[in-house]
Image 1 (tube, rainbow, N blue to C red):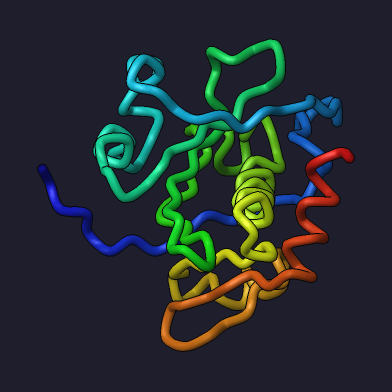
Image 2: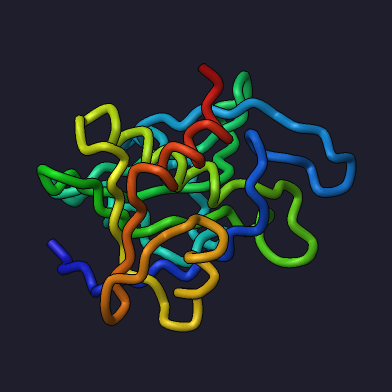
Length: 174
């Protein structure tokens, strides 16, 4: 099996919404984050993604989740690869599908939604919302400002309980 190269989170948190939002109409759509399966991988057109999500899915040390609009599970809006480190969740990769990137994107809020899910997953595991990741150096300040993440050292960052709670409250209705 291929070895994973070290990855750095380099996605822009475009907007913290309460789900995902159509950038033209402003309409908000309820979403679900569900485990990606081998069957789902057939839906992933490699030209729409930068990363090798099939490799992520095959890795025994991580789980891959897809973000979809409720009642429209066939169109993947974003993907998330994470690992359970026993006391926190580590995010390996976060990516929006090609049509949700750049100035002509269809939906805003995808990356924030996926980070909120990672925080919720951490709470569900009993880790008090702690989530860690490695950020591209130029985006460290961006993650401090948008996710209230804490810069630890080098490229390492983490999200603590208060910041995790804010993200969860934003994206997941009680």
